[in-house]
Length: 227
Image 1 (cartoon, rainbow, N blue to C red):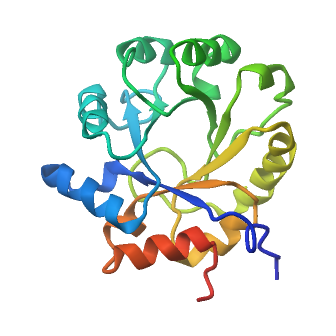
Image 2: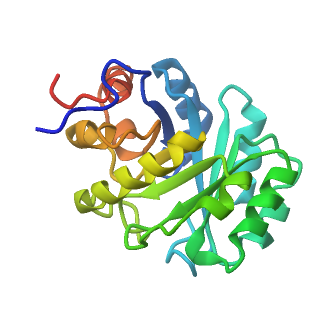
């Protein structure tokens, strides 16, 4: 059995993926997340091209930051992310992530994000083998590793990705860059996910389908499936 590298260390941070929330009662959902101990809100912006869906948009990001009680992270699942980044200019966001697969110039995009005052994150699909990130390190704050294909809500968790994720964690965390895991995270697999050494997990359905949200958040933060 693998040893959980997060046990005995700082707890995992939990970012709530809003795409699976009740969008008709969004402020109430935000308050529930806050009360349950969630650390941030995670909003996926899709263009229907890079990812074959268009669930959330920039207007929802604007509404989320007006609520002001939790930090807001944005995950751009779009082609040519520079176009969308300019639409977010001036918003008090925490982190903005874009996909390495969506641009030829990742260092330039990271620089744009930093210049706008946000933490800069680069995201990778499960099938992408992460190459040497050292040229990006001066511009990089976070790496977002997907553990589901960004095709639709409810895509299956891909456990086979985790050894590769663990290698990325080992490479970048020693240089002060954090790693977030996003996709299919829940109680049943949180022990395996925590074993990668990532510091943050993005959680959607496991939160919004929970009958005891505070307990679910606490267990995920602990990073132990065997409670």
